[in-house]
Amino acid sequence: MNEKKFITQEEQAKCRQVADAFAELYAEEDIIALDAGIYGFVVLQYYDPEKGFENVDTFMDSRSLFAHLWDEWLNAQLFTLSKGTPMRDMLFEDMLNGIPAEKRQELMRASTQSRRISLAMKEDVHSRPILMPTIAILSATMRSC
Image (cartoon, rainbow, N blue to C red):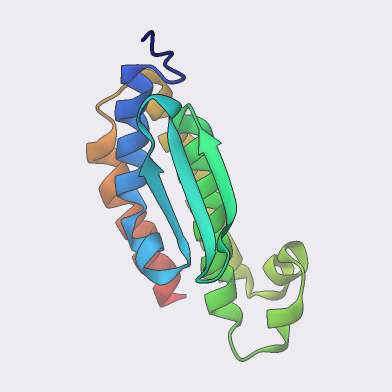
């Protein structure tokens, strides 16, 4: 049987690095990225025991997987910051504008760093040494906000 591949081996390796780098997110949120072999990577989100996963997204390149997981991580950080405040029910943009300027600047620096990581991933399959500590540092920064 002729098996069609939807992802290159190089992109699969990069996606695996991205998925591994966001392991902390999986422990904190209802989301996980998994290697689906020849089909790419899938992100499963919002598990319901009766229905299964509400969201199932497939990724065949590391940059889009990174962007998706980064957005989820950033949203999780904002929701954590807003716990127990009136900001909890705000839209993302309003929430961002509602946090103190110093914390907002930290988030913006983190977003800039994420773009740099994304560009590095495009150029080098061995970007994991940059990716893992950077996500850990950004997570620690957000927890201290």
